[in-house]
Image 1 (cartoon, rainbow, N blue to C red):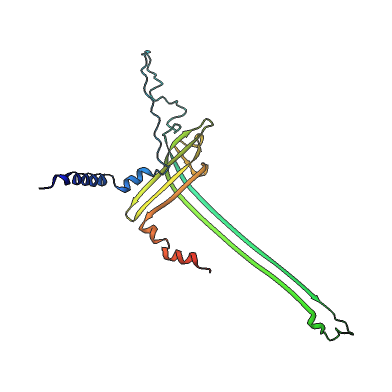
Image 2 (image 1 turned 180 degrees about the vertical axis):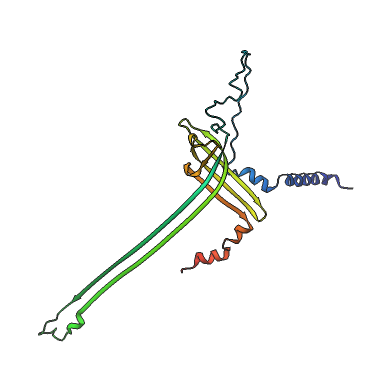
Length: 229
């Protein structure tokens, strides 16, 4: 039989174990660390009862004019972003300079300094520098990503944001996007190219075995940090 004075301690340990199993650190971390790209839900408006008018038209029942169709224009509507990013940068730098100088003193032919050698009193100096550098970078990103409208502004623009996460067998990958679009640039398929997005923020990253194998180890990074060469 268990001693009565130990029963409260055992019950507390069991409760802590069950609570720790139900709320794992990974789940708690996900709840406390929002990514900032969460989908925006549409604004819910309570339905106001209206007196019957005898007509079949009801503006509060999701009315949309024929000239707008089903094009996204409200908070929470999805918009497809076509990522067509292609960036090429090239830079070349060349620098060259040179400098020279000379000096000579002719001693007198008579007197106490006549023993000096004229060739020993000549001096000259010269310096030159020649340097150059080239840099080139090319990046391409082609994909599609559906985001939601987070804010509609009075000037006809909207803030969109969203993310797409892929759980693969060798790791996780996700694409995050946010930016400002013009509602008039959205086509009939509710899509818009990323080249028409202002203040665009694109993040394409991942984690897992493949990403770890492509990075240098901590010991190599340490020696590169302290190496003077």
